[in-house]
Image 1 (cartoon, rainbow, N blue to C red):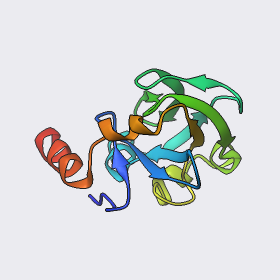
Image 2 (image 1 turned 45 degrees about the vertical axis):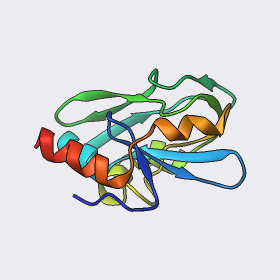
Image 3 (image 1 turned 90 degrees about the vertical axis):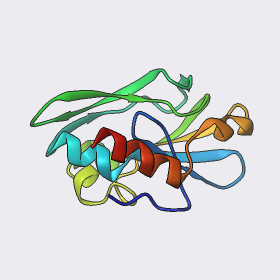
Length: 129
């Protein structure tokens, strides 16, 4: 399973990409989409919603199960990927690209420091595999 070097990761299998200024883009990892199977529905928050690291911000439903999505950082949702809401299969076909979920304006950029680097994330998925 790939874990792109430019991203940070959570133990719940979300990825975080630093954006312009104090914003980040969030999605689920290749490992997560592989474990889920065919994604058929995604529930995402409204723009403007405050999210807290470790708390649920939405759900992904697949042919196998329903899984909660957890915020990797504290902040305000500033964008939602409507394409994923309309075409949930993007999570399976392009989890690190067109399958992104939300963008968050960080309350505190130091929140990124608690996330896993690619090597630590690879060890996590090897241990779970």
